[in-house]
Image 1 (tube, one colour):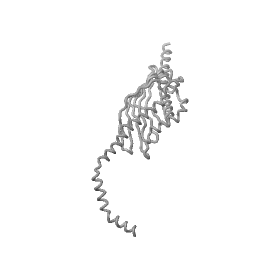
Image 2: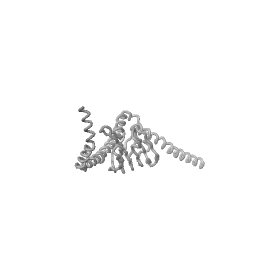
Image 3: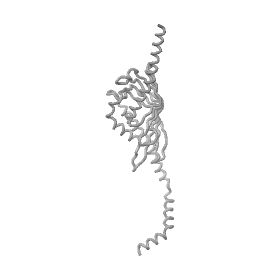
Length: 247
């Protein structure tokens, strides 16, 4: 009898351990696939661990690649999730809270014909074009979403800008892709637009102002003197050209 109980216990522990290991890998793959499909950017999760008994999940390093721009669009160092474990295998995943800690959003832009071309416009365009595909993704609702330690990295080779600024922590309620949720895609778009506006205010305006200040510092007398010397230096050449035109 003891041997049977021991065997049953051993079997139960083995099945539970295996389901946790295999389940984590399956869910990790589903998450990567769904996120990549939703925003049309390759997404990778370094590590995912789910405690089914506690109803907790810990994610280490989420990376989202850029499209048509260098390096990564977004990296998230840590994600802590509290959820109803049984809902993972149901139609709607019920998540009580998500905390994202350590965000780096890389904003890349360049100037073409006096117009700004950036990775935010490209991202929002991808999100809008994929709105009709949301029905194929797993449904979920997050009651509370907290985002902290956000860094906005601003990069423009054209303007020789490479700086990082900190953004305020953010908090949202009822985020997801269910009928009662605030669309997570809307939050991504709003966040990226705010990032772009921050860049325009803090970097583009200051860069233009710096160029204007440099122009103000130019000595008018020195400019006139340079023009005068240039004319005197080329006076004989100009006379010869005028004679040839007259003749």
